[in-house]
Image (cartoon, rainbow, N blue to C red; front, side, top):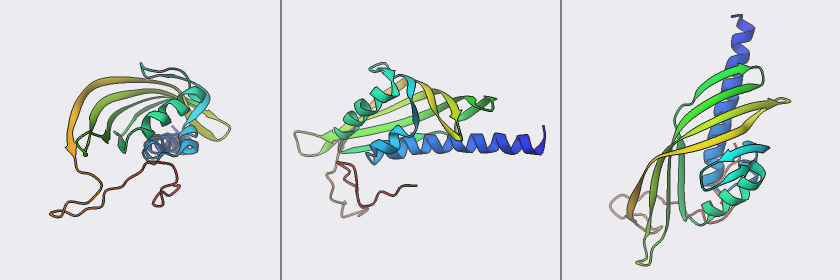
Length: 172
């Protein structure tokens, strides 16, 4: 393999990793436009509860995320197989957690572990997801969490992201 080909492959893989990081960040910060930039609008999406195009998926998933007062998405380093200059198969493990207000005044939710089975396509100079199949491996309830006030024993700030445009969000 030539040095030029190796460099092109590394750049393609880096662009794909960037899309996956953007996917997590834009869900957690409720950035609709950033979320849409991860998928080609005609991408085929299958999450079990949703099957359809990315254009229809984005508003559906963002509505779900907005119902959580806290959300967190994390990807493992992906396995990437470049098929050719414009197509790739990608598999990543993911951890997701979300919490909603409880009647008792705290927050409770669920943590999920699953796999993202993706196909990526490069159109023009940009890589995006063109097919996604999410497979849930397990879920686990989260116990009641504190409200948004830091604990006095370990006073770390707790973000409250209830709508788009949080003042600490940065477009990266």
